[in-house]
Length: 236
Image (cartoon, rainbow, N blue to C red; front, side):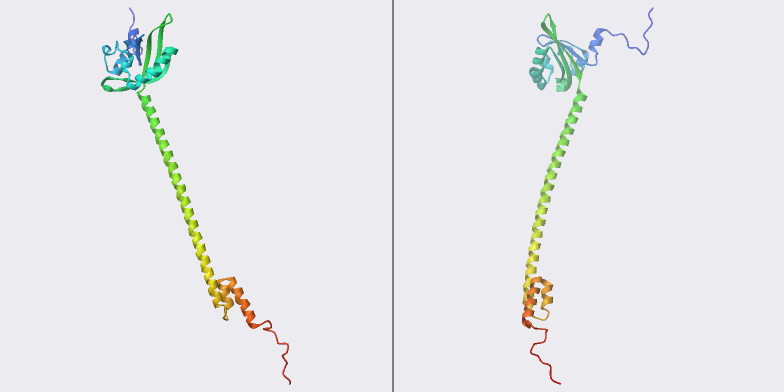
């Protein structure tokens, strides 16, 4: 009498159990791409019964985009190479749901003649969600980068505008200062005939001071400040 299996050991499994309850989907197609066998795991993902799928073409369980991808990429590659690895495609489930899966396709040949195709499918919902999050994060980062570049460009424009305005204001102030200086010089020249001519001129501009000094020397003559040669001392 055989002993019962230990509690920590799984029960014996048949090939049908292994096929139907595998952690991935299995489907077998005939040479015309019609479903001839499908496991229970994939049926549960699709939300349909076996009678709803068997006999129909594999394209019927694909989304419109999935059918286009199958016809343009998977089918030609499968016909040419006999195997297609790591193909991401979407299944059309009951009630219009969409299930992203990662698939592997292998052609079955008998005596060099293709008689069918075996497909393994893995639920890629979490992976697709992760990829979408990555794409969204990348788009947000790119948008932030674009916004930063726009802000930097605007800041450069503002700085250039500010520098131009400061330069214009500085030039205007320098021009006003020069005009005021010239006005003060003219005023000093007009006032430069009095006894404070030198101080008045030197106060406002060197040119007026020099002109006032020259006028003052001319008014006193060349011998001012020295005794005249014809001057005689009075007799005792």
